Amino acid sequence: MNLFCRKNYTLACVILLAAGSAYAADPAVGVWKLDVLHSKFSSDAAPLSELRIYAETPEGTKVTVKTVNREGKETVTEYPVVFDGKDHVRPGYASGTSIVLKRDNDYHASAVVTHAGTVMADVERTISTDGATMTITYKGKNETGDAIDKVMIYHRVPNGQSR
View 1 (cartoon, rainbow, N blue to C red):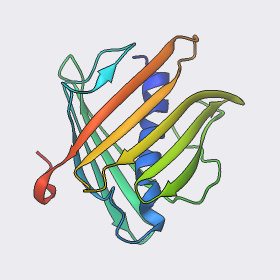
View 2 (spheres, one colour):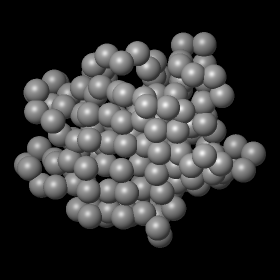
View 3 (cartoon, rainbow, N blue to C red):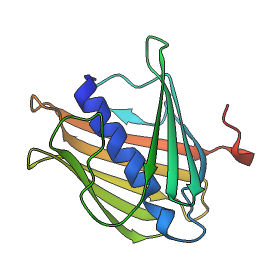
């Protein structure tokens, strides 16, 4: 996956998953591990592993994403997120890229990622009612118009262990 696409995907997922920070007892807060075997990646290689860590802070939610790609290179991305229903632009991303969030309830949120006024992706996050499984569905396109279709399954890590 190219850098532009990866950053937009990460931005959408991080903000979407942090969207619950405005609510008490947010079921997204904690540590989540990607189930690579049961996830589906249509257009690009699945990572070897990924952890998502959501922590409440006085300013909102701090999200840390630790990804190990197919070549074994680890990247760590951190975002402070405040869910307020407005367009958000993040420093370091392509100019004109933004995301708008919608939260239906404690267990379901959605986002629309746009670039220069064009919708690039629709993202949905669903957490199981028992709080053990999180599913992120990402449907969109990269800057060359190639389709991106992913269904990522995450499992909550017991006791918040990060490895």
